[in-house]
Image 1 (cartoon, rainbow, N blue to C red):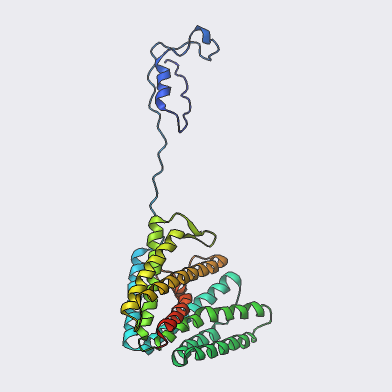
Image 2: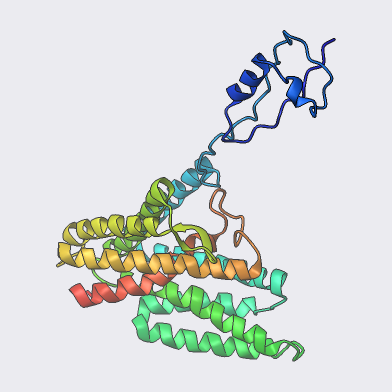
Length: 331
């Protein structure tokens, strides 16, 4: 068999035809005695095709969740919320209270599992439900009184345990009382107005539209990270999408759903919702990163836990309540 010289390695910018051209002519002459080959055939066998490395296929963007389950659960929750909101106000207040209790359970459980922080759940759950009811019945005054009593109950309840870790446990308990039930109380306070169901519906629609706009625009056009150390999936383009979608929805809602509202007020309301919803989402992302978890719970397939759905709603509630009071009064 004739001796075939080794095929030189080719880099990414090299042309494979150049190597083949070298084999078609004389491989060496008398002046190339330094070559390691003693002789070469005049008509060498053609080189076999050298397989080229497969080019990596571009990966498609993925939402990272079961979209079918997420849509189904979202539609189911929407039906329950709308039905309770426009049938009997008190039933919707009960829905808020249940969501608050479940959210507190998820938060305190994760704090215990990941950090060994034992925030007292019983006074938080009882006080949180009472806070929502007080906000609906007595307004902001009732909400503040219920918050103060809940904080006191947390301090006293924890005294039944050994003193080690008392400070961190009650601090986490006070944080949980403010973060979940107190912020949720503003939703119940919106409901007090004569057009309360429409105010709450506007609040929910704007928050959902903001999240949807951020996801849709960020998924399609997102390039520049918004806060890579907190939430790598969020982009500045997505934030602009949230603002645009929320402002458009706000103008429509204020013009056609809120008594005495104007479209320009809806633009400002939508802008505020997009900002507060994004900050709320980033805030819970910070908590989950500190705890080293992806979701707060697994209760809602495709969504995670209740707290994973409340993340943007909770900080947005007082913003919407305040702006509606400023624009059209308390009702």
